[in-house]
Image (cartoon, rainbow, N blue to C red; front, side, top):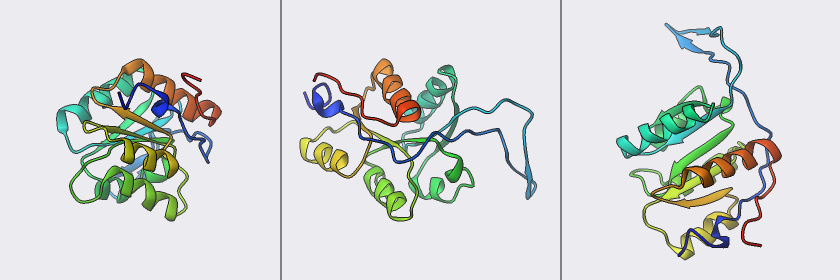
Length: 164
């Protein structure tokens, strides 16, 4: 099983956690919401039901969550720099999740990235992890494992050693 063995080994983050304070753009003006700072998780997923379920899960776990239907939408977002962790699908139209990760790294953004896939493939998994992806998960995503991935990426920035 591709997603239940050491394939779940996480990669070291190159950035500390960022916090989203609810700031954003309204009517072309930057505004800041009156709320405590929460860590922003951005979710890039072309499948709308999965995207919304991930948003709800992130919110239930206490994170601020923003969803994007495509890599292009995420890259155009003013929230890109506030993103503490990125959760993205591997296979999407336009730019794949792995291409998005490579683009961010090449552009100098060190955002810990967790990829999810409905089509696990050992070659893709190995390439993703060797390319700096923090965690590779299969759909349906195990909520507890995803939570451990997020915690490790945000708190320690160090790989989670599972099944060692």
